[in-house]
Image 1 (tube, rainbow over the protein chains, first blue to last red):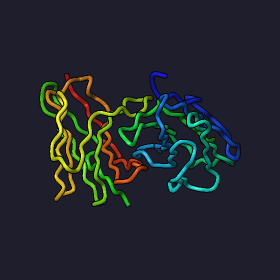
Image 2 (cartoon, rainbow over the protein chains, first blue to last red):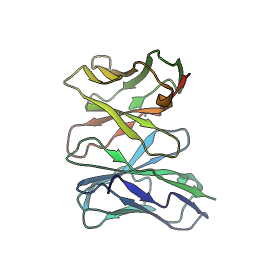
Image 3 (cartoon, chains in turn yellow, blue):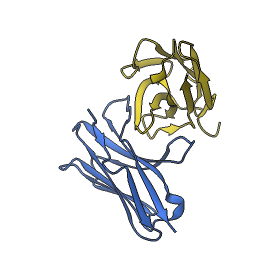
Length: 112
Length: 113
């Protein structure tokens, strides 16, 4: 595709529910990254995939967060038992060979 | 512990003048630096980057300067245009294949017509 796409663009959920966020990277990009941006903050690294494996999960804030990537392409970020502090914009980026990262438009998650 | 800091949350500049956005970092392992621009409701867009082996990189109206000894970089936009109004994020990465980015908190640039 022309760029990184993410779905949904907006998600409102109730505290305690699970959510799944999807990222379609640029075709051919081997690296995929998840970040989140809380209100008034910079982007916070969550997890990185090289192909289907995740060598760096250091940024996941708790064990309620998990992510997978299948076929070296689409990735899903899952948040279980959502809390209000999970409210943020979740951004996905992809890159080829460790060069500049290209970002999707993000998913705005609101936990009521 | 903020490893990348943008101490100015906002900056206003007159159209046609120079915009200078600043960024400081603390981690000496960072060797690659980038600037991203972000409009509301969109993801960050890559603008320009610089490797630690250089002290300047220029692309059209945009120039990034790196001062390694001061752990400081800056983005110059000349001449500034109203369409440049956006939030600018400084980001840094270290050596290795992961290249996860560490971002500053951003500076809102407003270019006044």
